[in-house]
Image (cartoon, rainbow, N blue to C red):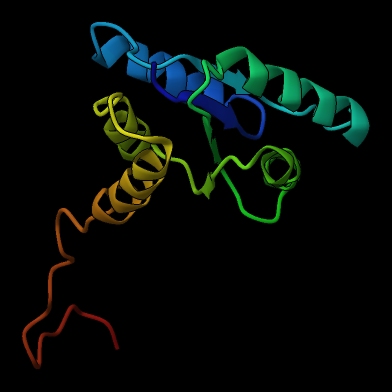
Length: 142
């Protein structure tokens, strides 16, 4: 068995991340579900939908919940569900984080959560530094 994965995000974010991962990997090695609360959905309804989605991907080893923005509605609902079930929630989901988690499906739920955090930190780089003007450079301004 392995942990399940649930992306609870603003509309379109989780679905796009999942579809991108499906295009990169030959197959998704973890059960994964995405859910986006609608702007007018009552919180109780969304809470029930998140609980059902988590249950749907939980094969007995738990669920790692990834969400996009801490403090926003999707994260708040994910946190409420996670507290009741003992699931970890990692905010700031991005593609490097998702791919790293999907590349280590054999890890425990706790290890997957640590892997997600490490991937988030390691996946944001300054690929090209801005050019630095030499002292005294004049660009025709002034």
